[in-house]
Length: 88
Image (cartoon, rainbow, N blue to C red; front, side):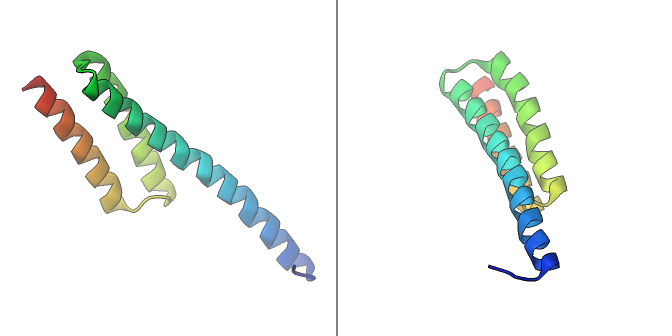
């Protein structure tokens, strides 16, 4: 454990940020799973509305730097493909 005052504060701040980041990422994953579950049950209308909120969550995680830009785009693309494949 650190004994310098600034190092102690840095440990505390890092832990706070880690917990906040963890909740944002968990929320993003939950919305992605919700869309995938709706696609599995072939509920197109609800899947589209859930997709819109999932995209917002993914974009917010990318904006905060929690997820790489390419990974965010890949997740959105795969979800869109699933929804489009369902309606086609």
